[in-house]
Length: 129
Image (tube, rainbow, N blue to C red; front, side, top):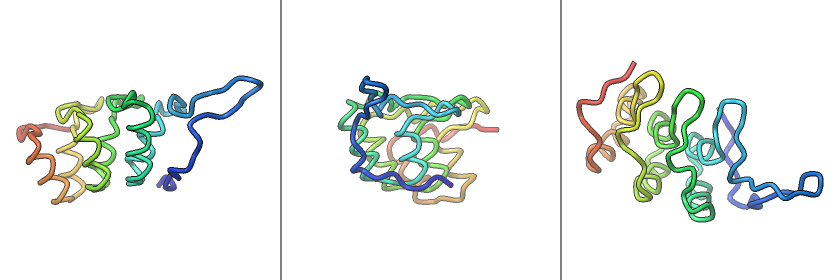
């Protein structure tokens, strides 16, 4: 599992005289810092990244098509899911395998995450691989 992110991480770093925004750093799996924060359940980092980046990666997909909400749902991180949903995360977005946030929460056995998604309108007929 990924270590939690610190919400005290500066929004940019200097690299060879250029300032690189950390909001737009993407790892080898195509994941943004918002993906990592959601997967780790780091609520402070999720909120900070949403606020400071203007939500620019809210709908970002990893190379496997996974969104930050799908990561948080699959891990049962309800507190991290809440700001993503409030910011307008797509509850119907499907990863490359067809799995949606609701499917990830069900497979993970996370009843509170399932309840949250259904309460906010996630499609109950969601299918996943």
